[in-house]
Amino acid sequence: MTLSTLALMAPADGSSTGMIMLLFQVAAIALVFFFLILRPQQQARKKHEELVQQLKKGDEVTTLGGLIGKVKDVKENRITIESGTASVVVERSRIVKVGDKAAPGTVG
Image 1 (spheres, rainbow, N blue to C red):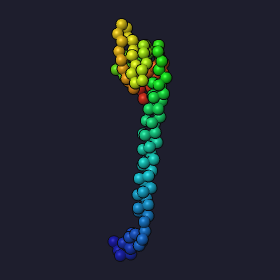
Image 2 (tube, helix red, strand yellow):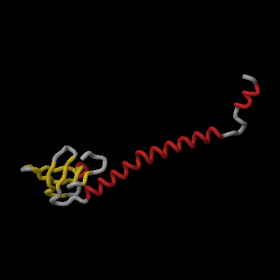
Image 3 (cartoon, rainbow, N blue to C red):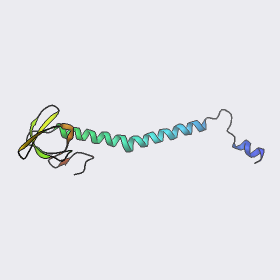
Image 4 (cartoon, one colour):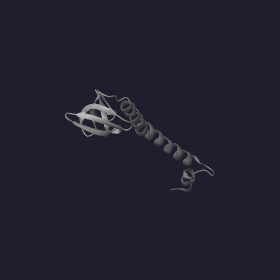
């Protein structure tokens, strides 16, 4: 390489273009990460919370473990489910399906 070619390739004194481009790329990656991963998770969590908060006695539910039954009793954080002749107490967060409405992000 000649000296003139090297002089053209060298950054100008006080040039911060490289740093600005790096910051722009990091910001773009952060935005993509937020809109493709974090925001959909937040929306799904919010919809699941609404689904579980609307539970009432007599609703047919499916738990995360696959237990299917009718709601017998609703307390603050726990639900009593009657399945066949057995009654089981589960946490609200373990309910994945109420009637025909499935929680977002679950199969079924």
